[in-house]
Amino acid sequence: MTVSEKIGEVNAKYLVKQNPTLRKQNKIKTIHSSLSIEGNTLSEEQITAILKNKRVIGPEKDILEVVNALEVYNDLNSLKYKSEKDFLKAHKLLMKNLIQNQGAYRKSGVGIVKGSKVAHIAPPYENVPFLMKDLFEYLKDKSEITLIKSCVFHYEMEFIHPFMDGNGRMGRLWQTLILMSEYPLFEFLPFETLISKNQKEYYKVLSACDKEGKSTKFITYMLQIIDTSLSGLLENSMKKLNETERLELFIENTKQEFTRKDYMKYFSELSSATASRDLKKGVENQIINKSGDKKTTIYIRK
Image 1 (cartoon, helix red, strand yellow):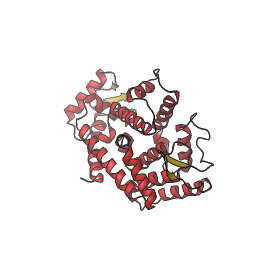
Image 2 (tube, rainbow, N blue to C red; image 1 turned 45 degrees about the vertical axis):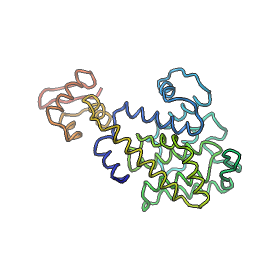
Image 3 (cartoon, one colour; image 1 turned 60 degrees about the horizontal axis):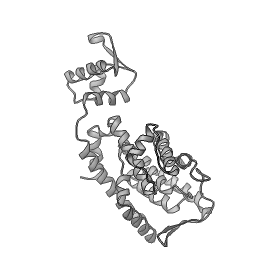
């Protein structure tokens, strides 16, 4: 099955609109994986605690990285992937109080050292604004497939290395945002987890592309990562939503007042009896209020 077919299957099974708990878990996995690639030592449990405003013992820098990442990922839907201004805004939030000149392109040369070797010399800082402008122009190309476009941007941004720090997490964040523009399910797909489990391969492919001067290997690598992540999502999310999860999902995506007919239109595979049971349970559990009777019944979100 191809990546596109798997995306279709995920959408068909309502997995794109997963229940809030699963969404939260996947967001935590994404943040944990993306930051652990950069050396952050906090666990998923500690990130969950930070999300709940609980006190966590750990390196101050690591805690700050998580706090910043949570702010950015919570606000992901407000960022426009074609906007360089939003790109800089996201970096400013992500690196707040971690480096100087966050949200601004570097003003000096930079090389990436792996072990005792220089793995990559980034382009001169004077070229960064023009290179990034060209890269954002490329994002406006409607003839390019979004899946490919997201991989190319990720690789090219890493190659340009526009910031003094935070380039890796920005590359992964922006690839997610580009993919979300066509496939909303990518908001909930923590493909960074697979990258973090095999970081050597990630850096090896980036290095191979640098030597070849083209991003083909990185595109192939990232498409394989996405494909495997989609397979995992399908396997782990095959269970059907229960009545409470269905109702919470519907409430998230509907207007203040609605009818049983609206509910059945949203979940077209439900029988009228199941829809009635869901709504009755919702009233009993004080998730929704009920007004009117029989044909005049209206349900109101709390």
